[in-house]
Picture 1: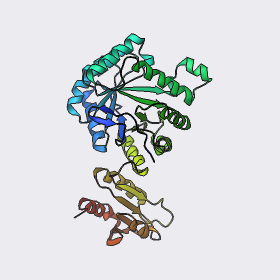
Picture 2: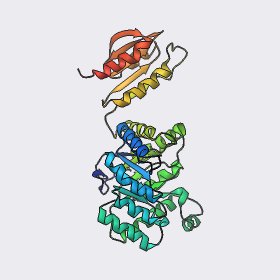
Picture 3: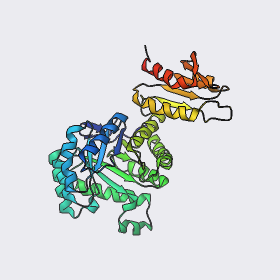
Picture 4: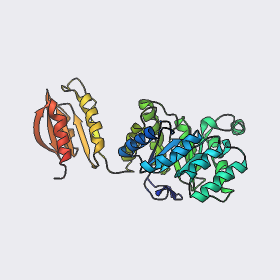
Length: 351
């Protein structure tokens, strides 16, 4: 796939756009005012592979908390602001690396100008965010209902508001919970602008439905070469968003590194607890920075053969299983030892 060659924007020293790798984002679900809880969540997200993190800034106390949060984290921090332009200004004063605003809901031109002037002074990029659920009434009336065309028109109107004040450090985000509408909107806006795009399916849902909708939507958009940073929106622990984003990028060949786990769906021939074992393996491998494929198989018919196709694999039989490395059977162990021998093999990989 050919990546769209957009403008490059630096967010706290982390560049997106151009030929830079697609960055993975998430958003804290803690109260930003609770510095301890927010920092703890960000550090967990960093460990999982998050590269840019966003926090809600609904109060002055939250805006002021940014200063202390910034001291304790290692990735760029984005402030999410709605309605009160003063919160955007205060967040930038306290060191936020990017702000997310909808210029249409923070007041008149004078307020937008005040935010842009501070962004210029602080060298802070502005993410223009438009969601289908918050589309302006005149645009809905123009098109009859919420449409991809209306979402794009609204976003480009907001971009021009910022450009009018001679500022172009802009990232655009257009989101919808309607996957096909979101895809269509991204195709349209990519043809109209060279600003980097923050891509995601908003309000996508819980772990299962959210992952399916995000994988389909982001998969198509990214495969078309559109998008410079992504967020998988899930109702739950944001660490799960990072796991999903990494796997989407890896599946599309847009990111290397990290262990890919493949496992069989189980059937009546399975004689070990493969489901439990596969889940344990998937959680365990998150801590390794290895570019490997690990197979977890539970069938004596196809298991050993499939495991041989991976870099490392375990294949179960009746209460026991095989450890297979680069196509060769290394040892046979009891079922209870399979996870341990796999971990040991990973710990000593390359030796």
